[in-house]
Length: 612
Image (cartoon, rainbow, N blue to C red; front, side):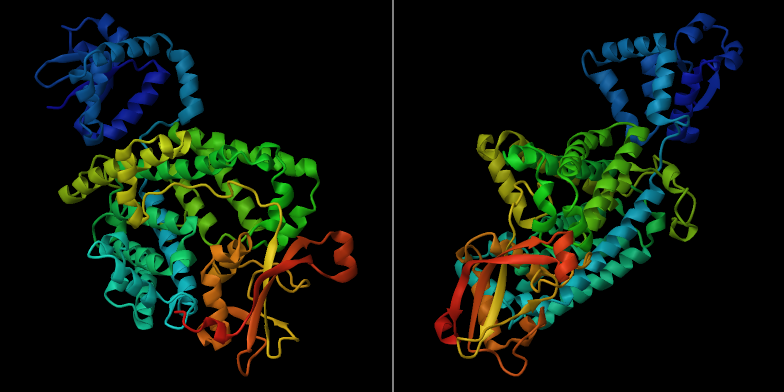
């Protein structure tokens, strides 16, 4: 009553691959070695069993070689395309049979390669544990992101913040018609008050906890994505970092990974979505290395970039101070290894199981090295979470506590998902591959060579920030200009405002702050790299200091004017450098600095009259 797949039971290569196909097709197909089954079919010469595998259908039809393999695999929904390709595409059948004959003649050597690439066990991998761990990790990262932003939201974009969200939306609304809802997609169009900003942050926290708990994961993930997108639109510069768009893209894909059921442990992880996550990981890591070479920066090409990186990065950790003291040859070797990991290792993502395990180890090692030397908020945690899709359940079950494993029996690999989710997964797969493929092409050959249709496609996708291109530190900064903001009541005696995390006081040790991100401290680093006219928000920040805005002052560590705001403020620019061992022993300072000039001249509230 079922098809019977007959193979050579004396061939180790055959046994391994049959075990894999059996795990894919489940009970739909029976399997037997010809040494046991041949006598049941006397009309089939034994030589045919020895020459190739045979699939014997219930109606007596017999298929050999690659055709037999594809017909057997077609009983698994996700492999039907192989049989359709074989039967419908011209020359596909001849090519497949040619490959089959080659494999058949070289089974001994290919058996060794099989072990190298897949291991001794070839059963089809499952990803229930992988998906469960990833979703919980993503929920935790969302939680950190929302809580971190919630503690700063008033000072950044509140009514008395640096860039009030209500003012921004009013300006957009006065210049753009109904298209504003598409070009600036945010729930803040409903209400842009401080109260509603807190509602969005609080809603994100609740949705994140639901994802961590595995309760209604798909609706909770959709809410997380919608709320974070909404906040990123009104926070603008303060929520426009690469990890913010990476979180949006990852969160968007996760909506289709989670089963559209109430409990996540009953979910089904569509293979297409798992491959979309791997494609995202490839783009993230490969482009991070590619942009460094494509930029033409000589510091990357001559392997000297790490001679500057540790002290010039936005928020170093105390480990970065020690890393800066390492000899030049070690820094050059580190850059070389980094390029090897970012440019070569990502290609292992598309290879079989064992190369993916090697890729996981190398990529996670790089992220940990970055994490201990620099504060990049939740970026490294999110990158490591994406690497989970290089592991299958068999690899993770060894290290995953029982309480983190999904409950219930594992569903068969071909278990159908709901028709609505299946259609949604197909549509999202096509959309992501089309947009991201266009973006990748633009990175590799330069966007100016793209046709007009490609530009329009990217423009349509851009407002939602959920399909992106990546690449950090394309050009290495070789100096560290640092803005020191000072206030005065008489224009003669000036006292400095101290930020919570960025360098200021020379004796203050760099600290670990990740996965929290102090958004103002980060923007101060970017502002120092250019002219004040390139950072128009900075003038608004100085105005809030002159007004004594409590929400903005809460973003700082020390307010030297606790009783009343100063009459004047200014910003001076210094060149900061790490000290060395001898200077630190003698002075106790972690930093040294030299005055470079004035970043923003002294101003008073009167200078801001007539401005918004």
